[in-house]
Length: 316
Image 1: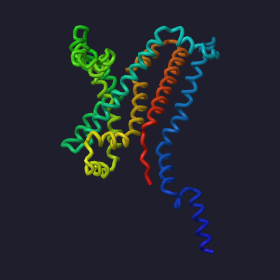
Image 2: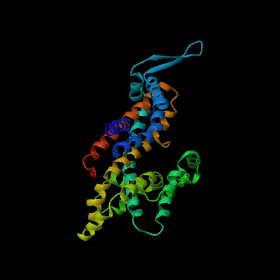
Image 3: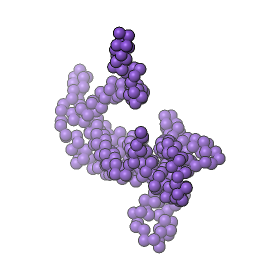
Image 4: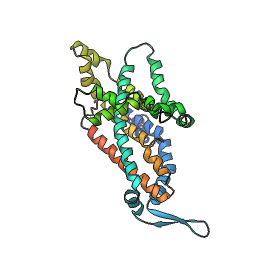
Protein backbone atom coordinates (compact mmCIF):
# COMPACT_ATOMS: atom_id res chain seq x y z
CA UNK A 1 0.00 0.00 0.00
CA UNK A 2 2.80 2.41 0.93
CA UNK A 3 4.69 1.54 -2.25
CA UNK A 4 1.64 2.35 -4.42
CA UNK A 5 1.18 5.67 -2.58
CA UNK A 6 4.84 6.57 -3.13
CA UNK A 7 4.57 5.68 -6.85
CA UNK A 8 1.46 7.85 -7.19
CA UNK A 9 3.18 10.83 -5.55
CA UNK A 10 6.17 10.32 -7.82
CA UNK A 11 3.95 10.47 -10.91
CA UNK A 12 2.30 13.66 -9.67
CA UNK A 13 5.69 15.26 -9.09
CA UNK A 14 6.80 14.22 -12.55
CA UNK A 15 3.60 15.64 -14.06
CA UNK A 16 4.11 19.04 -12.48
CA UNK A 17 7.80 19.02 -13.40
CA UNK A 18 9.37 18.47 -10.01
CA UNK A 19 11.55 15.76 -8.53
CA UNK A 20 11.86 13.08 -11.18
CA UNK A 21 12.02 15.42 -14.21
CA UNK A 22 15.14 14.95 -16.30
CA UNK A 23 18.00 17.42 -16.14
CA UNK A 24 17.40 18.56 -19.72
CA UNK A 25 13.76 19.38 -18.98
CA UNK A 26 14.70 21.32 -15.87
CA UNK A 27 17.29 23.28 -17.86
CA UNK A 28 14.68 24.00 -20.52
CA UNK A 29 12.25 25.34 -17.91
CA UNK A 30 14.99 27.44 -16.35
CA UNK A 31 15.70 28.91 -19.78
CA UNK A 32 12.06 29.90 -20.20
CA UNK A 33 12.12 31.57 -16.79
CA UNK A 34 15.09 33.70 -17.87
CA UNK A 35 13.50 34.76 -21.20
CA UNK A 36 10.02 35.24 -19.72
CA UNK A 37 10.49 39.02 -19.11
CA UNK A 38 11.53 39.47 -22.73
CA UNK A 39 8.60 37.39 -24.01
CA UNK A 40 6.13 39.36 -21.89
CA UNK A 41 7.64 42.66 -23.02
CA UNK A 42 7.50 41.55 -26.65
CA UNK A 43 3.86 40.45 -26.46
CA UNK A 44 2.52 43.28 -24.28
CA UNK A 45 4.61 46.24 -25.47
CA UNK A 46 6.40 45.68 -28.76
CA UNK A 47 3.89 43.50 -30.61
CA UNK A 48 1.07 46.13 -30.50
CA UNK A 49 3.56 48.74 -31.76
CA UNK A 50 4.63 46.43 -34.61
CA UNK A 51 1.00 45.82 -35.59
CA UNK A 52 0.26 49.57 -35.56
CA UNK A 53 3.35 50.27 -37.67
CA UNK A 54 2.27 47.68 -40.24
CA UNK A 55 -1.25 49.13 -40.33
CA UNK A 56 0.07 52.70 -40.76
CA UNK A 57 2.14 51.55 -43.75
CA UNK A 58 -1.08 50.36 -45.41
CA UNK A 59 -3.35 53.28 -44.50
CA UNK A 60 -3.32 57.05 -44.77
CA UNK A 61 -3.88 59.15 -41.67
CA UNK A 62 -5.97 62.28 -41.28
CA UNK A 63 -7.82 64.15 -38.54
CA UNK A 64 -11.53 64.97 -38.42
CA UNK A 65 -13.10 68.15 -37.08
CA UNK A 66 -12.91 66.82 -33.52
CA UNK A 67 -9.18 66.20 -33.76
CA UNK A 68 -9.56 62.42 -33.83
CA UNK A 69 -7.20 60.53 -36.12
CA UNK A 70 -8.93 58.68 -38.97
CA UNK A 71 -7.14 56.00 -41.01
CA UNK A 72 -8.10 55.04 -44.55
CA UNK A 73 -6.88 51.76 -46.03
CA UNK A 74 -4.69 52.41 -49.08
CA UNK A 75 -3.25 48.95 -49.73
CA UNK A 76 0.28 48.88 -51.17
CA UNK A 77 0.22 52.51 -52.32
CA UNK A 78 2.91 53.74 -49.95
CA UNK A 79 5.19 50.80 -50.75
CA UNK A 80 4.85 51.64 -54.43
CA UNK A 81 5.54 55.31 -53.73
CA UNK A 82 8.65 54.44 -51.74
CA UNK A 83 10.16 52.35 -54.53
CA UNK A 84 8.87 54.12 -57.65
CA UNK A 85 8.06 57.71 -56.72
CA UNK A 86 10.78 58.71 -54.26
CA UNK A 87 14.03 58.78 -56.26
CA UNK A 88 16.30 59.09 -53.23
CA UNK A 89 15.00 56.13 -51.21
CA UNK A 90 16.12 53.48 -53.70
CA UNK A 91 19.60 54.99 -53.93
CA UNK A 92 19.85 55.27 -50.16
CA UNK A 93 18.63 51.68 -49.82
CA UNK A 94 21.30 50.42 -52.22
CA UNK A 95 23.98 52.40 -50.39
CA UNK A 96 22.85 51.07 -47.00
CA UNK A 97 22.80 47.45 -48.17
CA UNK A 98 26.20 47.86 -49.86
CA UNK A 99 27.72 49.29 -46.68
CA UNK A 100 26.18 46.40 -44.75
CA UNK A 101 27.59 43.73 -47.06
CA UNK A 102 31.06 45.28 -46.86
CA UNK A 103 31.18 46.02 -43.13
CA UNK A 104 29.75 42.77 -41.72
CA UNK A 105 32.54 40.45 -43.01
CA UNK A 106 35.19 42.95 -41.86
CA UNK A 107 33.75 43.16 -38.34
CA UNK A 108 33.32 39.38 -38.00
CA UNK A 109 36.82 38.61 -39.30
CA UNK A 110 38.44 41.31 -37.15
CA UNK A 111 36.63 40.17 -33.99
CA UNK A 112 37.60 36.54 -34.66
CA UNK A 113 41.22 37.56 -35.21
CA UNK A 114 41.34 39.52 -31.94
CA UNK A 115 39.54 36.74 -30.03
CA UNK A 116 42.08 34.14 -31.21
CA UNK A 117 44.93 36.40 -30.07
CA UNK A 118 43.35 37.17 -26.69
CA UNK A 119 42.67 33.48 -26.12
CA UNK A 120 46.39 32.79 -25.95
CA UNK A 121 48.32 32.68 -22.68
CA UNK A 122 49.78 36.15 -22.38
CA UNK A 123 50.54 38.73 -19.71
CA UNK A 124 47.70 41.22 -19.21
CA UNK A 125 45.16 39.19 -21.17
CA UNK A 126 42.23 40.36 -19.01
CA UNK A 127 43.27 44.00 -19.43
CA UNK A 128 43.41 43.69 -23.21
CA UNK A 129 39.95 42.08 -23.24
CA UNK A 130 38.58 44.99 -21.23
CA UNK A 131 40.23 47.51 -23.55
CA UNK A 132 38.60 46.00 -26.63
CA UNK A 133 35.20 45.94 -24.88
CA UNK A 134 35.36 49.57 -23.69
CA UNK A 135 34.03 50.93 -27.04
CA UNK A 136 30.85 48.86 -26.53
CA UNK A 137 30.20 50.70 -23.26
CA UNK A 138 31.07 54.06 -24.78
CA UNK A 139 28.69 53.49 -27.70
CA UNK A 140 25.60 53.12 -25.50
CA UNK A 141 23.09 55.61 -24.14
CA UNK A 142 24.34 59.08 -23.26
CA UNK A 143 27.92 58.26 -24.21
CA UNK A 144 26.79 57.48 -27.75
CA UNK A 145 25.27 60.95 -28.09
CA UNK A 146 28.43 62.56 -26.73
CA UNK A 147 30.58 60.49 -29.06
CA UNK A 148 28.34 61.36 -32.02
CA UNK A 149 29.05 65.07 -31.46
CA UNK A 150 32.71 64.57 -30.64
CA UNK A 151 34.85 66.56 -33.08
CA UNK A 152 37.81 64.23 -32.59
CA UNK A 153 35.69 61.16 -33.42
CA UNK A 154 34.36 62.87 -36.56
CA UNK A 155 37.87 63.79 -37.57
CA UNK A 156 39.11 60.23 -37.10
CA UNK A 157 36.31 58.89 -39.28
CA UNK A 158 36.17 61.41 -42.11
CA UNK A 159 38.44 64.38 -41.37
CA UNK A 160 37.48 67.61 -39.64
CA UNK A 161 37.53 69.82 -42.73
CA UNK A 162 37.74 69.42 -46.45
CA UNK A 163 41.40 70.43 -46.36
CA UNK A 164 42.09 67.91 -43.59
CA UNK A 165 40.21 65.05 -45.22
CA UNK A 166 43.36 63.54 -46.69
CA UNK A 167 45.11 63.85 -43.33
CA UNK A 168 42.24 62.03 -41.64
CA UNK A 169 42.78 59.04 -43.89
CA UNK A 170 45.28 56.43 -42.83
CA UNK A 171 46.02 55.36 -46.38
CA UNK A 172 44.84 56.39 -49.84
CA UNK A 173 43.80 54.40 -52.87
CA UNK A 174 47.08 55.35 -54.53
CA UNK A 175 49.04 53.74 -51.68
CA UNK A 176 47.16 50.46 -52.12
CA UNK A 177 47.57 50.60 -55.89
CA UNK A 178 51.33 51.00 -55.50
CA UNK A 179 51.39 48.07 -53.08
CA UNK A 180 49.34 45.78 -55.33
CA UNK A 181 50.64 47.05 -58.67
CA UNK A 182 52.50 43.84 -59.44
CA UNK A 183 49.76 41.54 -58.14
CA UNK A 184 47.09 42.31 -60.80
CA UNK A 185 44.55 43.32 -58.16
CA UNK A 186 41.27 44.82 -59.43
CA UNK A 187 40.29 48.39 -58.70
CA UNK A 188 37.20 47.34 -56.73
CA UNK A 189 39.29 45.30 -54.32
CA UNK A 190 41.77 48.15 -53.90
CA UNK A 191 38.93 50.55 -53.05
CA UNK A 192 37.43 48.03 -50.62
CA UNK A 193 40.73 47.50 -48.78
CA UNK A 194 41.27 51.25 -48.60
CA UNK A 195 37.82 51.79 -47.13
CA UNK A 196 38.35 49.06 -44.54
CA UNK A 197 41.66 50.51 -43.35
CA UNK A 198 40.25 54.02 -43.11
CA UNK A 199 37.17 52.72 -41.24
CA UNK A 200 39.22 50.82 -38.65
CA UNK A 201 37.96 53.17 -35.90
CA UNK A 202 34.34 52.18 -36.57
CA UNK A 203 35.21 48.49 -37.01
CA UNK A 204 36.95 48.34 -33.62
CA UNK A 205 34.03 50.13 -31.94
CA UNK A 206 31.55 47.58 -33.28
CA UNK A 207 33.55 44.41 -32.59
CA UNK A 208 33.44 44.17 -28.79
CA UNK A 209 30.38 41.95 -28.33
CA UNK A 210 31.39 39.68 -31.21
CA UNK A 211 34.85 39.30 -29.71
CA UNK A 212 33.40 38.14 -26.39
CA UNK A 213 31.12 35.64 -28.14
CA UNK A 214 34.09 34.23 -30.05
CA UNK A 215 36.12 34.07 -26.84
CA UNK A 216 33.35 32.07 -25.16
CA UNK A 217 33.31 29.67 -28.10
CA UNK A 218 37.09 29.30 -28.14
CA UNK A 219 37.22 28.56 -24.43
CA UNK A 220 34.58 25.85 -24.83
CA UNK A 221 36.94 23.82 -27.04
CA UNK A 222 38.61 21.07 -25.06
CA UNK A 223 42.38 21.57 -24.60
CA UNK A 224 42.79 17.82 -25.12
CA UNK A 225 41.93 18.30 -28.80
CA UNK A 226 44.76 20.82 -29.26
CA UNK A 227 47.11 18.55 -27.31
CA UNK A 228 46.31 15.67 -29.68
CA UNK A 229 47.02 17.93 -32.66
CA UNK A 230 50.41 18.91 -31.27
CA UNK A 231 51.28 15.26 -30.66
CA UNK A 232 50.35 14.44 -34.27
CA UNK A 233 52.63 17.23 -35.49
CA UNK A 234 49.94 19.59 -36.83
CA UNK A 235 51.00 23.18 -37.44
CA UNK A 236 49.17 26.17 -35.98
CA UNK A 237 47.68 26.94 -39.41
CA UNK A 238 46.37 23.37 -39.77
CA UNK A 239 45.04 23.38 -36.22
CA UNK A 240 43.08 26.58 -36.86
CA UNK A 241 41.39 25.37 -40.04
CA UNK A 242 40.86 21.76 -38.96
CA UNK A 243 39.91 22.30 -35.30
CA UNK A 244 39.30 25.92 -34.30
CA UNK A 245 37.33 27.09 -37.34
CA UNK A 246 34.87 24.14 -37.44
CA UNK A 247 34.32 24.29 -33.68
CA UNK A 248 33.77 28.06 -33.75
CA UNK A 249 31.57 28.02 -36.88
CA UNK A 250 28.24 28.27 -34.95
CA UNK A 251 29.55 31.45 -33.34
CA UNK A 252 30.36 32.85 -36.79
CA UNK A 253 26.68 32.55 -37.72
CA UNK A 254 25.58 34.11 -34.42
CA UNK A 255 27.98 37.03 -34.81
CA UNK A 256 27.03 37.55 -38.45
CA UNK A 257 23.35 37.83 -37.56
CA UNK A 258 24.12 40.04 -34.57
CA UNK A 259 26.31 42.35 -36.67
CA UNK A 260 23.65 42.67 -39.38
CA UNK A 261 20.98 43.56 -36.83
CA UNK A 262 23.34 45.94 -35.01
CA UNK A 263 24.11 47.75 -38.28
CA UNK A 264 20.40 47.74 -39.15
CA UNK A 265 19.47 49.56 -35.92
CA UNK A 266 22.52 51.84 -35.75
CA UNK A 267 22.00 55.62 -35.69
CA UNK A 268 24.68 55.96 -38.36
CA UNK A 269 22.68 53.80 -40.77
CA UNK A 270 22.05 55.92 -43.87
CA UNK A 271 18.65 54.34 -44.57
CA UNK A 272 17.36 54.84 -41.02
CA UNK A 273 18.64 58.43 -41.02
CA UNK A 274 16.94 59.17 -44.34
CA UNK A 275 13.58 57.64 -43.39
CA UNK A 276 13.54 59.39 -40.00
CA UNK A 277 13.38 62.74 -41.85
CA UNK A 278 10.26 61.74 -43.84
CA UNK A 279 7.27 63.77 -42.65
CA UNK A 280 4.59 61.42 -44.01
CA UNK A 281 4.28 58.76 -41.28
CA UNK A 282 2.55 56.25 -43.57
CA UNK A 283 5.27 56.55 -46.22
CA UNK A 284 7.98 56.33 -43.55
CA UNK A 285 6.40 53.18 -42.09
CA UNK A 286 6.33 51.59 -45.55
CA UNK A 287 10.02 52.45 -46.07
CA UNK A 288 10.92 50.96 -42.69
CA UNK A 289 9.04 47.75 -43.47
CA UNK A 290 10.68 47.43 -46.89
CA UNK A 291 14.11 47.81 -45.31
CA UNK A 292 13.17 45.36 -42.57
CA UNK A 293 12.07 42.71 -45.11
CA UNK A 294 15.29 43.15 -47.09
CA UNK A 295 17.38 42.72 -43.94
CA UNK A 296 15.42 39.58 -43.01
CA UNK A 297 16.08 38.22 -46.51
CA UNK A 298 19.81 38.92 -46.12
CA UNK A 299 19.83 37.14 -42.75
CA UNK A 300 18.05 34.14 -44.31
CA UNK A 301 20.64 33.98 -47.11
CA UNK A 302 23.51 34.23 -44.59
CA UNK A 303 21.97 31.44 -42.50
CA UNK A 304 21.50 29.29 -45.60
CA UNK A 305 25.09 29.75 -46.72
CA UNK A 306 26.42 29.16 -43.20
CA UNK A 307 24.42 25.93 -42.88
CA UNK A 308 26.76 24.28 -45.40
CA UNK A 309 29.89 24.63 -43.24
CA UNK A 310 28.60 24.91 -39.65
CA UNK A 311 29.75 22.08 -37.41
CA UNK A 312 27.71 21.22 -34.32
CA UNK A 313 29.54 19.09 -31.78
CA UNK A 314 27.47 16.18 -30.53
CA UNK A 315 27.50 15.74 -26.79
CA UNK A 316 26.48 12.43 -25.25
